[in-house]
Length: 98
Image 1 (spheres, helix red, strand yellow):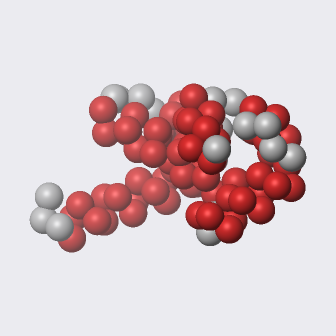
Image 2: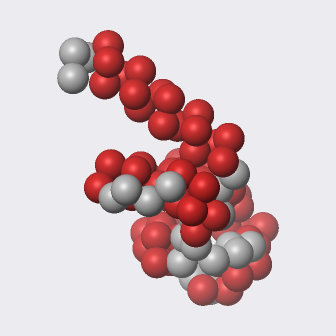
């Protein structure tokens, strides 16, 4: 059941994803969905949405020459979230000698 949650988020990450909408898509009440996500994965639904959005943004940053602001806007991320992630990734690559 929760795999469908992740699939839905990945397919709709650029949309305004509210708990109610996601719960409706997987036929759970919002409170039940929140509880199951936290108990099975230790994450909030919002954490999952941001994680997927950040992964999509990382892919675009690596594989395109799109400006950060455009990537952030299209993925519903703030520029500071994307910048933070980009700096983390750059630091990791640098410390690994890449």
